[in-house]
Amino acid sequence: MKKIEFDELQQSRRYKYGYQSFILLSFLILIDTILYSFGFIWVKHPTNTFIILLVGSTYFISRCILGDAVVGPKEIPRQMTAKTAAVVLLTMVVAILIVGYLISHRSIIPSSTDNDGSVMGVVALGMWVVLGIVYLIKRIRGGKVEQ
Amino acid sequence: MSKNLRLKSARAAMDMSQKDVAEAVGVTRQTMNAIENGDYNPSVNLCIAICRALGKTLDQLFWEDEINEKN
Image (cartoon, rainbow over all chains, first blue to last red; front, side, top):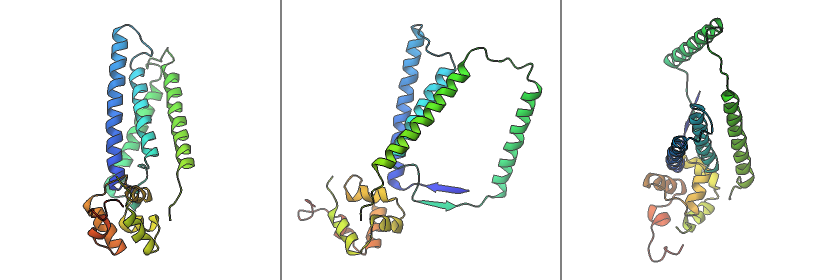
């Protein structure tokens, strides 16, 4: 496992981008609420909230990529401790139990009738496409080492 | 903010690239570039680390007066 440490410029940029993302999320949720109060429902609840969260996350990660605030100057190798291993094992056991329960009780779980799942999938895919484009732009634009 | 040409010349005198100095002080090359271009005001700790890496004093690299103001 590796722990990424950012330098002071990267940290200050990440704080700034985080603040901007928070403001963006607040305004998007506010606009969504106002639209809902006027009877305009663009996507059903709670899918709209998840989409807004994805937009905010995409903005934050894109800004971090453009501002070189994703990878720190050095990666410090970190050994896996017994505590970390226990947490990982416990998480895996819980995940397997939940999946097993859901599979065995598939008949009593109500299935979704709308296409919110596919909407979320398309938005998540769009997020990855946007991040890929931002990364490519950054690679094309930057990378010149001044001697 | 104006460019820090004294830092750039001190680095060149030591025959070091931005990447070399950045690795010596534990920051990214982009951060060193931002400092040289005057886009970022480093903390005192980072200034001291840069000075140590380049064998200079804070005055020589970062102090601004009438002579060095236009640099």
